[in-house]
Length: 173
Length: 102
Image 1 (cartoon, rainbow over the protein chains, first blue to last red):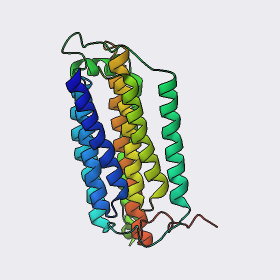
Image 2: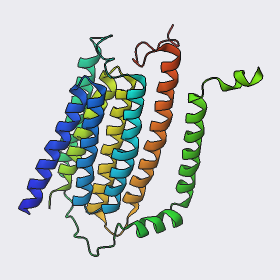
Image 3: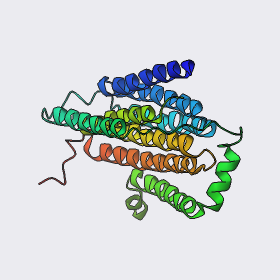
């Protein structure tokens, strides 16, 4: 019992601290690196919860692919230092207020309702294995899976079309 | 075991930080990062409920995988929009992109 508590608190502190660091750092590159640290700690949390496949997907897709895309765009545009130039002063207090209200509300609901589920020990090692998740995705959730594939195709085509630099006009010449 | 409400409160904290980031930052890329943080907090909830309710029903993990796919699609299109806007207006600050504002 005790080691799990220690792991929970250390990881939780690192995750929340890195999220706050992402907010406070002026340089967008540092924000992205803090976010990678946050995603890595969340991946360790998935391991603690007994979901190794999700943890690995978290590392490869989120911390790997998505954040590399972020860093690539930040450095391509040179968008590191765009915070200081403009400012709407009323925006930050309202944002902080809304965030704190949401946090207090969620914490109050969770504590007052006393969401206490017993917590089942994992009966076998292969629950949550990629094989089981794949079988579920291809049998019960086949339609959402196919819709997701269409969504990914649409996103790919959309990204290519949006970033194309006025190619049709050049073809007419 | 750690009670589930701790996981949920912790995920709510991450979600709130992400919400603050989305609402307060002006760099469009940083706004997208806040959205990523919020999606991640939702994923923690899904996996935690899977673990604490019924381990044999792995629908929670399947949904988490779908959230990953949707997040990847969202980032691809969002960053493509940012690049496109930067080409035309030479800025990614959210309050300078005001052509639709009258």
